[in-house]
Amino acid sequence: MKIAVTYENGEVFQHFGHTEQFKFYDIEDGKIVKEEVVDTNGQRHGALSGFLHNAGIDIVICGGIGQGAQAALAEAGIQLYGGVFGSADQAINDYLEGKLGYNPNVHCDHHGEEHSCGEHHCGEDKHGCSGNGGNCR
Image (cartoon, rainbow, N blue to C red; front, side, top):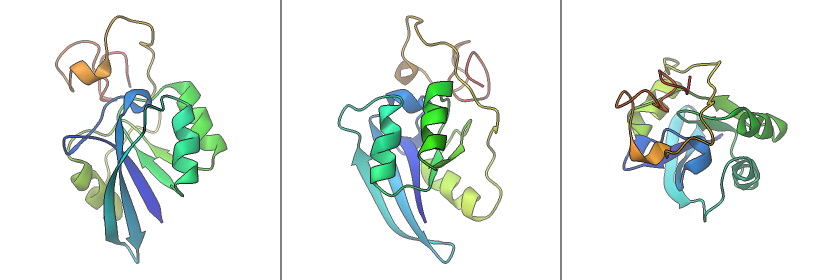
C-alpha cells in the first residue's frame, strides 16, 4: 500500500489543491518501509489526482479539500482521509494504529477569496483550512 500526505515542514498541509509537496509512505505488513518527500511540480487541485494515481497512491491524508478534487480522487480510486492536521508522520502512525482523527465530510468552500491557505494555520483565523473550522470543514 502507498499513502500520500499533503506536506509542509513536517506537518499535514491544510489545502490539498495548493500543496507543493506530498510525503509518500510505502506500507508493508502494517509498517512503514519507505518514506519520500515528492514535489508536485506546480500541479494543482484536480490535476493532483492524476499525479497521485500515476505514483501508485492508494490513500491520501490531507487537511481541507474541495469537492472537485475529492471527486477526482474518487474517480482515480484513491481513498481520502481529510480534515487531518498536525504532524504528517504522526498522522501515518495514527492511521496504521486505526486511530486517525479525520472528517469524512471534509469540504472547502472558500475558493475565490483573497487568501491562500499556505499563509495561515489551524485556528489562526476564521478562514482556517484544517478541516476543523472556518470555511473548510
